[in-house]
Length: 599
Image (cartoon, rainbow, N blue to C red; front, side):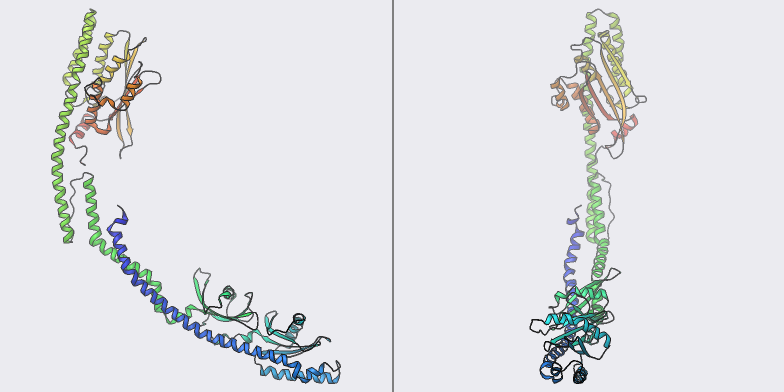
């Protein structure tokens, strides 16, 4: 049965079309609620991030203006250019500059250090609120690069990133004059304020990353999270991004990513917020989204079980009953279902099969009577043909005055006619048929002494199998009539009987195979082609009446389970092969008494 055209498939499709819009609406409602949460959380945290970045940028810009004004407004820095290096006035001026730098560090809250570098004397003055040796080392290492960037160019407001092992900083250097450079140092960690972001949870946090994605500040985020965020830096122009991290267990963890690139340096402010913590106020909606497919499947399965008991099972029983009836099982009766509609259908089906069964039996009995009459008519039609040939043989022997041969032939003819008196039976045993053929061939041997011989090659224990009377006789007779043409040596007829198995039916069956072969001239090619094409059945009144009679009796009795094949042997001579079911008299009686096909 085509499943697409079945009632079950149509019901599934119909129920799906009804439920799908409802589930889609519920799904959209939940997704929309989650989007609203994302929008609100991202807006709140983006405002905090933008405010923090704005404060940082403003301090860096003010520091730029402060550094640019040192060469114009600070008399101590200006005087150093004219004082002798190492003199008392030089040292006093440096001390005043140091005191001023320390005071200004407190004013610019993000600034970690101010420094003044004497390029001629390679002397560095550093005022810092942190570790003096570390900051001194960082500034000394970065000064050659800073000085090279300032040569021949207009000074730019951007700050450079310097790395000091585990500690990173922003550095800004300005050229006061040909000898002196002033600058400021900012700890990267001072620019990062993770505590101001909401919904960061245990797995969220903020970090500052460079243009290459490397972390520049300390962060609560692990290396995998920082790498994940760095891979999405190009999307910082969006209000927010939803990114996924594959955990070690194979599950996906989603984050809300916010970010703002810095205008003062090649760095980016990044915030990662775990969606699990963001959506903790929406557990019901999250759970519904996860359970939607399960709920749909449960509803569909429940409906299918209900309809299976109410509709599909009775329909399947009815369909199976119809299929059995179509195979000829007319004794099928169905149980009455609980539904009143299906009860009427089932009752009508049972009544219909009962009527068909009675009608089928009547028709089949009539067919049996018709077939029996046709079978007897065909069987009787062949006898006059044999009688005429026998009379011709007796006439020939009497003309030759071979009285002994006439006497022998009379004995064989007596046995032959005795067999003919029993030939009105529906079937005879194989050994009886072969005995009859022996009498016939003995008569022919008397007619053609030393020119004719025959061989009976019968497999043991086959004599009790039955076949229609006079099945082999016409082919032996045709072999004698046509096989002597242009023969100089003895003409030999060989009759063989074998039993074999066939697997063409659902169960293996036994087949009786009979062969009549000779060493004569064989069939003419034109006649052989006609015989192989079955044209012997086109003219039952013509010269092939014997063959036509045999094949029709076999078809009437066995149907497609019997058949004939004609061929010429490679060494010369004709061959006729007959196959039919191997049945004893008891088996044949049961098969004949039962219908062959009720369908």
